[in-house]
Image (cartoon, rainbow, N blue to C red; front, side, top):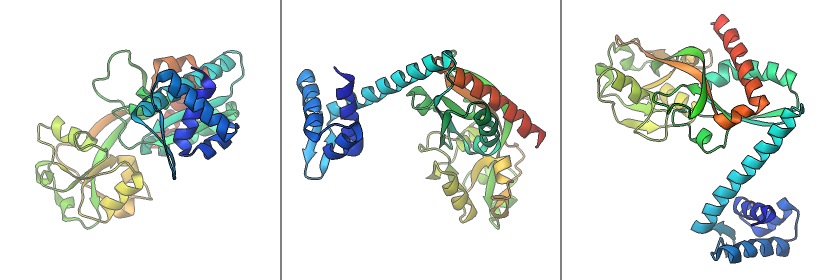
Length: 300
């Protein structure tokens, strides 16, 4: 199975057309079609379904596409690691981070890290609920910044604590639920969860830690803007980091609810795949994150 043929398949799936894929990989459309057909003959399976609107992967094609993407990432990682071990600090660093890390740590880290390593590009993805670490497990990112999840399998990831954080209960200005003083008084409220699944989320964790049944989510979001808009302009209740809720961009629209149980204390940390720690740029990036955390703590 040739890498050029796998690249052709990846391009066809992502572009949705053979014409677009051929432009992307720099071969003629008949040449790209031939490479895909060779893969299909080799595997004795149809990989692409063609129509008047373009192409899409079959179930078998999706399986090969997923593995081809993983192979491409691993080869890219190997080339970058070899370059960096040879002293050439260049490449791309992919990071997923919760909004608090984006607000407090990423700008300062990028400033100092970028000054030291100008040839390394940072690709940043925001993630509101990072505990499942899906992007890290699939190898789509090198580093994840967020609250360190409980129950991580020992040795699965390289984990370093950066700073303590507090998740506070917030409602929109004028919401009568701002007068609540216990979680029980909020148990019947309409909650917004910062996850794409009602079975997870920091709100659920807060209730469970206090021996209470978590309320079902009225809404689930994975966007900072959506979270701020829903809480600030409706009767919904949610959790967000204290330093986000008190930020000048959010504070005019939010009220922190001081319940007697206290808020949810977490530790913001950096997590990386063990194999990613072999990359010098990942180790340097983590060192700059620690400097940024000290800087953020001093400014608290």
